Image 1 (cartoon, protein in one colour):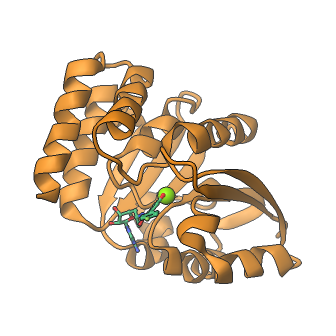
Image 2 (image 1 turned 180 degrees about the horizontal axis):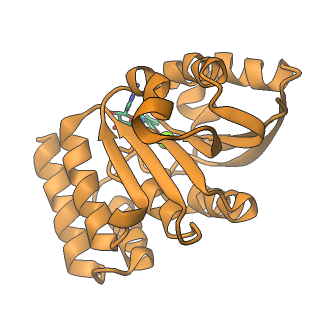
Length: 214
Ligand SMILES: C[C@H](C[C@H]1O[C@@H](n2cnc3c(N)ncnc32)[C@H](O)[C@@H]1O)NC(=O)c1cc(-c2ccc(F)cc2)cc(O)c1O
Ligand SMILES: [Mg+2]
């Protein structure tokens, strides 16, 4: 059933969005999720906070944990300067297949590398497999109990540099208490909270922005 639903999402994108126009893909997904069927995309409200942080950082090297249908992948990639690269990890093959088509419709394939696999398996391989030394910006939006272990793993793999910005979705709903406690109390991070709402609802949620201090 989930696959059928995602096919309907893709049809809505193809019907409403203009190929090669990322903004129209974003609007089509938001319209579908608000008026047809809710989905766990970061959404338009938190999405505009994501946009402002990405624009401020203007990153060359981006990592996204949890692609899902590719909505935030497109939101981020559309703002990247020429030559910048986004690597996004998704371990659910069905979601990855949907995301590839959403990314293609937006015309952003050449900025995005979608890797099918688990973050814990791929984070240690970023250097040797992708030639990435450090990331400038990381968007955390995968299983909420993976935010903290994967952040520690990125530290241990030397993938964070002085000034790297981590932006975490869902810090209130579903919530990531252990991650929040860590980034807010660690001397290695400067953290701040952007209050918002759970995508397409009135429930509170928010994004936590944490700058790695090295
Ligand atoms: C976790 C999901 C997002 C995706 O992440 C992939 N994934 C996972 N762990 C890994 C990994 N370790 N490596 C690679 N990919 C990985 C998965 O397959 C999903 O496609 N996101 C959520 O569950 C999520 C849930 C809600 C939500 C809020 C209120 C409710 F009542 C119900 C749901 C809101 C959100 O905004 C979310 O983001
Ligand atoms: Mg999320």
